[in-house]
Image (cartoon, rainbow, N blue to C red; front, side, top):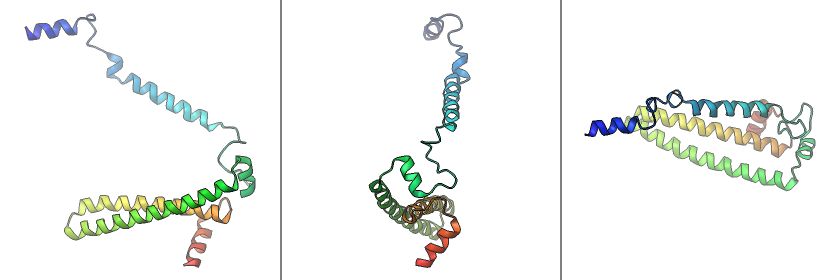
Amino acid sequence: MGIMQSLKDSMQGGLLSPFNLRRWIGGDNIKNSSRTVHSIYKGLYQDPKTSPIPHQGETFDQYIQRMGISEEEVQKRIIFSQKRILLYLALSTIVLIYMSYLYATGFTRAALLTTILLVVLLTYTFKEHFQYYQLKRRKLRSSLKEWFFDFFKRA
């Protein structure tokens, strides 16, 4: 009776109801992916006046004025960047200690994964510090060479 009941339930919507081809090939996922690609494509052609990317030869003050950002917002961003840098450095220190412990106890695979996490955290730290440097110096398109010499000149 169990097998016959399950056959009746599967055929209730018609002979081909258990064969949902669209669901099998992931039609909904394909549709969502195409919408995502379309939205990215539309985002490529933004109005240059409101584009968050600085124009060639544009100064920091011109960029701030064009984007409509106030001086208080710039100062808030500088403070927020400082806090994020400290957070990333604190997390990096914790991960470094844990990674050292894992290497010392012989868990090399876990230590390698922790090393990757440490590299990611240090990358975020660098990225945030570079943005902080540009805001603090009020200069767009600073080079890594400028950042490097200014960073180690202070230290």
